[in-house]
Image (tube, rainbow, N blue to C red):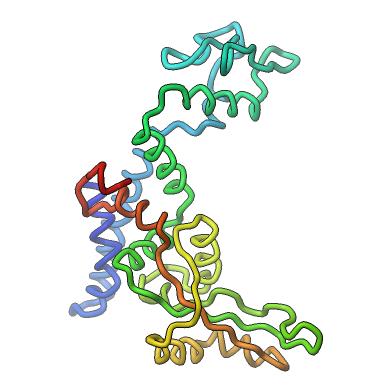
Length: 256
């Protein structure tokens, strides 16, 4: 139910609230529902143990149950090798975390490995970024512009504004000024990808260039150069959304 509420809120809260009488009150109520659902989702994600934090929660070597029932004892690691300990007999966090991952890899099925990967990516997303992935999930392309300083030597100098997009407004993000940062992060996580300028988005490019943040960047640049790109959900992003879509039904074959 929590996942379903997140999906419904992410898809409808912004547009619906703007159309209803008493729009502000309606939007506040939808945001409350969304926050409750996100809190519940956060609790569920906490059940996916962080490989770095897990060793830190265990007793020092020789003073507890070690790696528990699913893994080796505290005195052994991947392949039976001894795990590194510090001066006081405690596991070194980074080395122990790597041993944790290696131990988990033993006997992992393809579905379990995918689920773990998606959970790790999901934990890195902010609520605004989740909204943006949801907005991209239907395959819609969005315009992206970059503003740079023209240079006589290489043609392009310092970038003044990177990855500005109308995706944030379409998704109804809470922090629209961080949309360029969000787009950069989504691309770095391989959930979204940039391609060449799209001829079908010409009107949207013009609207985006009229946005205050873009105009400010243009005015602050003596010889501005504008580059246009198109933002879409990546192939990995599509698989990730199929696995995590709170409004969908689990389907192992489709997730692959």
